[in-house]
Structures are given as structure tokens and as C-alpha cells.
Length: 162
Image (cartoon, rainbow, N blue to C red; front, top):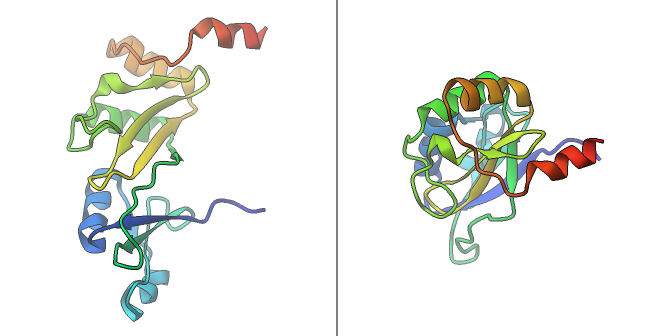
């Protein structure tokens, strides 16, 4: 088994979706796969934020392939600088998974990493993770005074570490 290659994402309009992903998350079309998007009806537009190592395959919804938002939990890993830049840009036109504008204080503390849960305008859900735990804790929680969201008590992790 190798690395994750791509995830199929249904959208009503591939070009509009590609613009949104470029503007808000830094994705670009991967030229090597452009013929799939342009060569035949229903082909995917491959986009990536890491030079094509990991991609989203944007498929235009159609009668045979209805719009079904991806809600199974695709997560992307960011380095600390990218994660901090994203956090400090909020709110910026990205919604959380409930449809409200994503805020810097929506950061989730998972004890070993930090995360933001977000959705694109068509309801496809994602998680952005950063495993440089101390760097984010110092910068956002310490320096910026952000109070993170927790899904479980920190004591569970501390007990696990003992």
C-alpha cells in the first residue's frame, strides 16, 4: 500500500470549485492530468496544494453522478508556518462544518496535534492538522491568547503518556 493519491470530490461546477480551492486553500490544477478534465465529459480536474503528491479529483455532479458531499473526514497535514498563516487569516470566507464562518478560536486541541474542521461551499468536509504541537501552542494559544476547542479532557492524554 502506498501513499494517498487523490480523493474524489463532487461539485456542481469544477471551474468554480477550482477557483475556490485555489483562493482559500492554495490548490492548483495539476497539468500532468489536465487531459482528463479537458479530454472527455465527466473527467476529473486534478488539483493539489503540494505539487501533485496528494490531490483532489474534482468531478462535476451530473444525473449519473449526483452531488453527494464528502463527509467522511479527509484530513490534510500542514507545517506550522502554513497552519499559523491559515489560522491568522480567519475569518476569510471559509465555513466550519456547520456552515458558520470559521474563526481562529475554532482550533481543536487533539493533544498531539491541532486542527481546523472546515467545509467547502458545496458541503465537502475537511480537517487541517498540524503536528508541530508546541509551536502552535506557543504562537496561537500563548502569544495570541486563543482558547482552543477540546473534544475530551487533557487528563486522558496525560494518563496515556504515563
